Image (cartoon, rainbow, N blue to C red; front, side, top):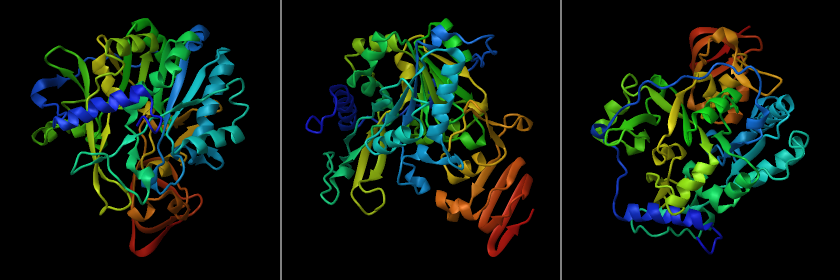
Length: 440
């Protein structure tokens, strides 16, 4: 790692996780040791005017390290088009530009890129968003890379066919080593920046909210996690809980749940809130926490079992050691969580999610905000597509129907929607035997 130029903070974080692996620590959180989180505050009312002083002390950090390979992409996922000619990156820049114009504050923007996404991201921004980034000289926080571990020997895996595959990203918990190791944490603090809002670049619902910023600043909390109510579609997502031993909030991912507790983990009535992966940080208190912990936050280690070549399931089994950004909630006494509307959680993880986002069920404002149309009352259409539409390129053959009044849509086999076709209620189209054309 030293030879590869990995920052000291990331090396120490990896060392901590690797030693836990060698001790055969499971990182499991038993149902008997926690209780459900209850009584959380709700999203605040609108503020009467923008607080330009607070916004000037804030940085927006977008996690932008994903390639979206599960959707057939070979470039950074945030270059997907939401509308013709308009990408995720374009809308993020538009959101920040609008906030700067309306408040007069120099809101800062950082993209946490990986080695796989850096070139595409910076190239696109330079070509397509020069005006939106006016006055900004640097927009990149680089994610670290760590060795993949041979599952048999527990040594760094060797793969001479493609040495680049010997490395992997360490999960979004790498935010903290990346901030301190890159020098960005000290630079931001020196510039008077105290607050950071962090969210995924594929979640266009996660905008920098002046209301939440004001609430967070007034709370004086060191850490704030945005959570929302779980639905049947969220049974596998990490949920918020309270540790019985000390009353500390914590995040439990499915990989940290013992098999015998899976039923309780998936009970959305018991564990009501899931992590949206949007957090707020007090940067001065983050620095204090890092210094008191020897430069490494004690985040729970997560084992991710893969093969060294993800496209070749017969290649060497490996363990990728990862941490979750939201797990830091248990590292800050006084950390808070707040319930936000579902509209702030609209990630694109599948081609079905993108199909819905591209429809008229969503609208894009002049300020770059993407939200469900008012008639939907905050409920997105649930789209399930056949595996033949798993990759983004295949969506072109489907067409773009109206989903403004659609609750759910299931597509199997060869289906095509004509321009102007309207889908309402709960719709199922099966073209597995004979092709189906849905007319206007």
